[in-house]
Length: 66
Image 1 (cartoon, one colour):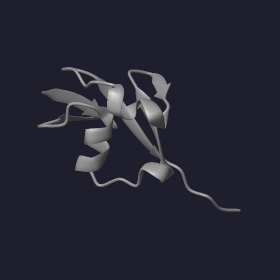
Image 2: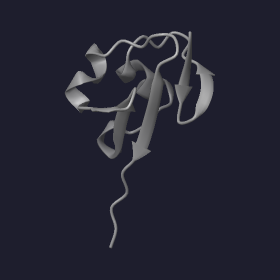
Image 3: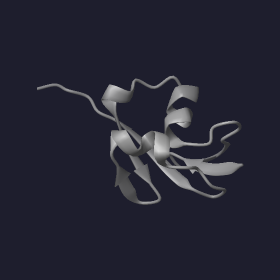
Image 4: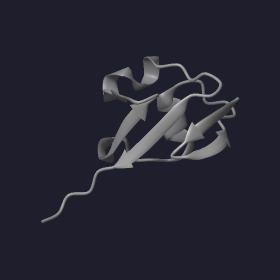
C-alpha cells in the first residue's frame, strides 16, 4: 500500500495503523505530532486509525528549547 509520508510516496508495507507506522520508523512517540489527511490526530487515536491507499501522513518532531 502506498501512502504519502512527509511529502514522499512510500510503501507502508505491513503497517496497518498510524501506531504501527511510527513503530516501523522507530520514532519516539512522546516527541512527535501526527497529521493524518490534513487533520491532527491525538496520540490515543494512533492505534485505532487505519491506513489506506493514498493517505497523506505528516510526522512533526517536537523540539524543546529556548
